[in-house]
Length: 213
Image (cartoon, rainbow, N blue to C red; front, side, top):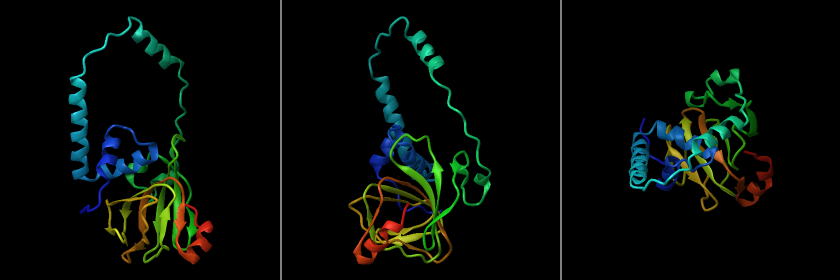
């Protein structure tokens, strides 16, 4: 698998520092796990951060600091662990996502369906699996927020190039594109998204309210 499109370096740096919200951390993390180039970059950031910590002068701690930490741990409410859904073993869910609860598929437009990924509820971004039929063409659109897209299967193309398995695409309100799915088969993508799509043109404005991702 040849990966040609990668997350921006500032996004990778925030991923290495754990600064991304859960949905973005998920999409970038799945890309990094399968991309040797981005893995090396993240490891370099982590090594630099570790070296910086070693140069920080130690700070005296209160004598009861350890006891207070233990007390906070014992007082914290225990989080219930949700059982994995049986649907997580089907062909629509890659191994990296098997620990997540995946919702049922719903149709959002002709040739386009999604399955929501249940997250902790923290952060504004939502994550989902998006499946597009071979040869599907979306209307030209932009975004009111951000869209992080990782191709898992199949391919799509737009003004930014051709995107195949492992490729990462970043969209925001400054990007206008019209994705076209390849004819070799369905395209399955892992997406983290804030805001909504904003369709361009008269037809786009007409059907835009009916396309909900």
